[in-house]
Length: 108
Ligand code: FES
Image 1 (tube, rainbow, N blue to C red):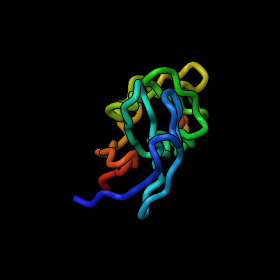
Image 2 (cartoon, protein in one colour; image 1 turned 120 degrees about the vertical axis):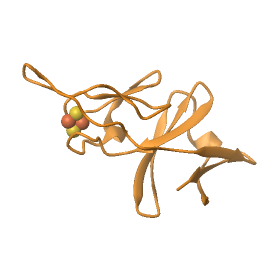
Image 3 (cartoon, helix red, strand yellow; image 1 turned 180 degrees about the horizontal axis):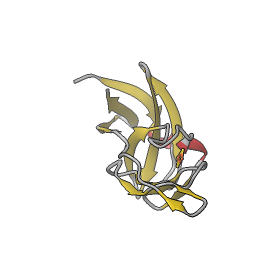
């Protein structure tokens, strides 16, 4: 288990997210109701950049085709919609977070 510092807690106010690169991973860190969560930044469908998506509560919506993911678990809530097609996509990996001295650390 290796925790890496990724941001100060103040850098990610409640209801916002931040894109971070750590080791070989591209992630987004989300502050939902005062708790921090991290999932992969690239959508499991066709690599849409979730950091450019819309955050609605604990749901992040992919900017490319609208897949929805629960940021607290990484679970796919609904898949992409392309024309009349409603598809499925995989869950996003999520990562353990801890806060020490107002610093957000992530287990990679
Ligand atoms: S790339 Fe995210 S829904 Fe298609």
